[in-house]
Amino acid sequence: MKNVVVIMSDQHSAHAVGCYGNPEVHTPVLDHLAHHGVRFEHAYTTSPVCVPARFSALSGLYPSSTGCVNNATPLPIDVRTAAHYFREAGYLTAFIGKMHPVDAQTHGFDYYIDFGHYYDYLGRKLEAFTKGMQADDSGKGVPWIDIYQRPEHHWSMAPLRDALSQNLPEEEHFESFIVREAMRFFQTYARHRPVFLFVSFLRPHTPLVVPERFSSGYDWSTLPLPHTYQDSPHNVNPYLQSRMVEGLHTQAGQDLAKQHLARYYAAVSFIDDKVGELVDGLERCPSEDPPIICYTSDHGDMLFEHGMLSKFTFYEASVTVPWILAGPGIPRHRVVASPIDHTFLLPSLLDFAGAPGAQFDGVSVRPWVEGDPDGVPVFSEFFVAQDKFMHMVRQGEWKLVRHPDGWNQLFNLQADPAESQNLAGSHHPEELRLSMLLTSHIESMQITQPNLRGPNPRV
Image (cartoon, rainbow, N blue to C red; front, side, top):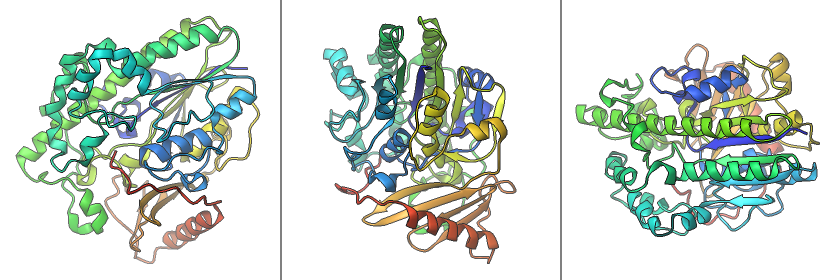
């Protein structure tokens, strides 16, 4: 059986990777990995928010199937994850990094290292970490989570957090700690039995604090903003209008946006470097074969496209993620154009590892990798409030977004990749077809009532 390593970053848009067409960001490791494996051109998160997206990837189920629909809802304890399936196939399983579990579960993993272990490692330096993030430890598993509840928090305040890079050397950043612990686990156990290892980073999620050697690699004044950054708020519904960043029509606002973009790209380059460090270490470990390696992220980031930042929307920058698969049994130099989503992740890994599968919402990507057949519909959802959801479906070149206020967005992504022309409401036959497909999908789900603890935290 083949060792399997999944590397997940946080909030890494597919629009910020070199091999996905961005010439401004430096990602040599991911570009190399994609060249020697399979790159999925249109990979979608099942929810543009951290917790439901992560547990959807781990379970092969859509958020509505599990009841874990926002950052305040834990995955029910009886939902099986990758850890259960791989362990039953004879694997030793480990999760090292940011699981973001909401509660105290380890969700079936034999070996588990998360923030608490990192805090123990930092010792007295934990104060430097939390102060650099401009937050106290909130006790929620991410120590700076409380800054998003403060009314004075604003995206343009990010430069104030740069002091962290002066307080902690690179080897003491969370990502460096996680890579060392992942290597320790793999070197100790992979020689004795097959392992399934899930490595999860923080970056490039805000706050955008990275070691100086990465942040100095970008000149913000030369970076272009996306051409949609000054979109009119009058062409969207009230929810999307509320997501638009104020001040981008001014020179000062554009300068701040470019500075933010430079810090984001620096965080991506930091992650790229750590992926390289991990992959190099894995290849040196004693094992019969190199592992199957999968790189992806939980969701994307708008990066000022359509005048927005962060996630929480179904525009491509927010809802598409990099997804690269490489290793023994994986074709090389291949790009898959058909859309897929994160419910395909677990069945695919089990398939390529030669482990028994089960019934999931998604299916293995093997047919796409080996032949790129006609695209199946892929879905994503976002819990807004109470029982209100936004939903998305994509099939082929068409994408439909349904908002809870009855307002739709319909895009032909081949003719209009920037999503500048909303064709909804024009009696287009694709709107009716995709709407029926989306309704059928929602009705067919085995809906689990979520244990909602409050509004969706903005993290």
